[in-house]
Length: 268
Image (cartoon, rainbow, N blue to C red; front, side):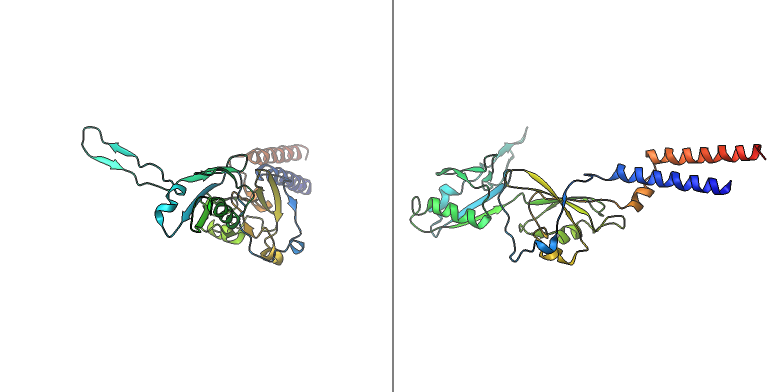
C-alpha cells in the first residue's frame, strides 16, 4: 500500500509540474531556431531606420546662419504663474522627426524624405545630397541620430524592463548584464528574440547563450525595439505553486492520499 501511495504521489507531482511549466512560459513555440555557426557576421552592424523611429538631424556649416533653416527648434513655452509676475520659460529644443508608416519624414525646405530602410550614415549622405548645392553654397556636415533606440528584456532576469541605448549599439550580453543577468531559473539555451523590420513586421528567433558562435552571429548586436524574453526552466515552474492552480493539485493529492490511507486502515 505504501508503494501505491508513493507512485500516486510521484504521478500527481509530475503532472502538476508539466501543467505549471506550460502556464508560466510566455510565447510558447514562438520563434525559429537559428544556426549561429552558419550566420556569421564579419562587420559591425549599423542600425536600420524603421517606421516609428524618432530621428534627430542637424545640419552644420561654417556659416551658422546658412544652416538655420534646416535646424528648426521647438518654440519655448513661456508660462506665467497665477497671482505672480514670475514667468517660467522652457529651453528651446531641436526639432525631431518621427518616421511615419510610409517610412517618410517631413524635412524643412525640402519636404517629404523617404528614410525608412536607410542606415544612419546613408541618411546623413542622403540629406546632404538633397540640400547641397541646391540650397547651400558650402558643403554641410549632416549628423543624424536615432533618439528612441531602446530594447526591452523580460522574464527571468534580475531587473526586467526597457533599456535606453544612447550610442545606438548594444550587444545581447550587454543588455542582459544591464538587466542584472539571468536568474538561476532562466534558461540559457532557448532565449526568444523578437525583432521588427523597417515595416514593422515582427519575427521571433531562438538564441542559445551557451553557443560559442553567438559572438559572430547577426543576433549578437541588438536593434532598436528588440525584445528579449528569458523563459523559466522547469525548476522554477515546480516552485511556482503559491497562489496558483498548482496549489489545488497538491491539495487533491493530499486528499487522495488521506482517502487511500483511510481505506487501507478500514480493510485491515
